[in-house]
Length: 238
Image (cartoon, rainbow, N blue to C red):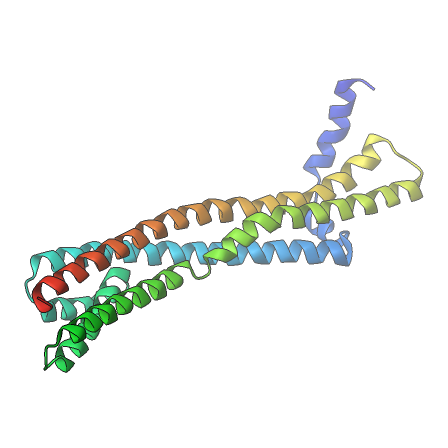
């Protein structure tokens, strides 16, 4: 059959594809796959929006807190400022370290060397616990994006394979395998793959973006914890 004739047959099929009809003819399995992928896509976009604004605010407040920390000479004033910058993971790490420092200095009336060593270890553990807690919170829900990005294309492919199997069954029952008969059911089946990619691509891009930002914040928390511990050792445990 000439190429022009093929194009003429395919054009009206593509132009007249009704997506509601596609869903109706997908069957229970096809409808379940499409709903699953659409649900994953909606959830991914919701997580992307929430995480974007949260991480952006965390970065902004962390810059503000570090400016206050290095410019101020009183830890109690820094602590009060940190309470207003609660989204910053670095400020929360400082708060944990400051609270533990207050406990250690309040209980170190005798000033023994062993107490100093235990006090430093306690503060270091408090900083580490706070860093882990903040990192866990930053990474929450991000794993869903990775799962969607890796699983959605295969779920869509499953829906396409299932649809193609049904399409070939319909073609067999009709006893006609020309282009007009084959094109529409095959194109309907391929919609599942398209929906799977629509769900997966934004999720993968967002996951990699958030992961890079979280790693930067993690590195900043580690650097701040080291700096704060050094300051505590110089001024409180001589």
